[in-house]
Image 1: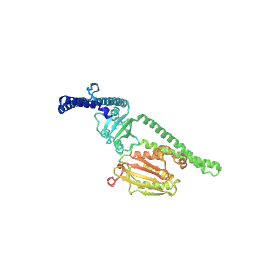
Image 2: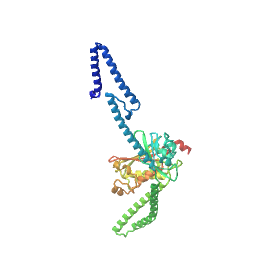
Image 3: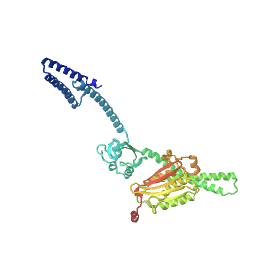
Image 4: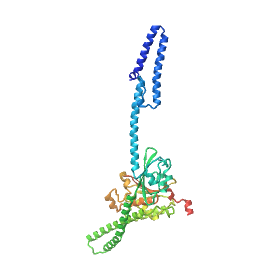
Length: 440
């Protein structure tokens, strides 16, 4: 390999030695003969290297290669091959970038590439119309400094992007947008903002239908329940009729519970976020009240409650909604726990991340495949068992909407055969400190 690469140089050296020997033999001046030949060979080598150097410095143009011999010629050939491949690769990359830019320019949705601090590195044309972000003028600026919306700032600060964010357009209050953040690499993220008006209109139609239908069903259902309860009081009904009336009454009450939950969801979805001037809620008293209610219900199975909540534990919010959320979680913990097991309720404060109420049971648990869907409407892990328990399938969905109205979220962790932990996560600003309480 090496021999073939420097074959010409070896021939030159051998030829030079023979020429030097011949001159030395003819003149008898051996030293002068060899020195002269060595100078000629060195000049030839330096000329080759000089031409190669000048060609490389001039950009190694493929269409202007120097006339070289030996190893220098082979180097030029290899450089030309590599440069040709690089130019072809560069052209393919440039074509790919042109297609990407054309595709992103044609997209109606805003796309941004940001660094770990949400500083803009790139944005498509639609970003200007949707968010007011100019790719050239706003490069290097933080998204939160351009789109000044506390909802977006809070979402980006928390860095929990499993769920998209819905927010009002900064360009038009009539438009609602959806933000998705997709992290890639070590320090970059893709922000994708989509106009959600069509989807929201469909959702509003669905919500209006559910709300109106539930309202229309509530009155006749109340009348039906009243008649069934009256029939239950009669002593002259045959046993088979009494059993039928009992079953019908149970199903009517279940339907009434479902309608009430649907109306609660409809109301939660139509109301704005809880404001900072909301009522002060004592969570310890609220938790104790929820526990007393569950102990008085038919689902209670002698579970014990460990309450690790300070007195007082005060936050700002809607007491009725918060009680509904906590009650639903405690009910689930009781329903899916065995008799005489523990249920632990713990209150934790992190000044930077927020306030956390965790409710841990040691029941049968849930397979992790189902965790992401537990808060969906009517989703049941075991449909038959859930119906036997008397649930509507809307409890955790109500919890989710209550938490969203309070600027928080629900986190569920579970393991089969070990138990389930539901954590209600509130933002730090919802906490009522001693100083704030005295000022209020």
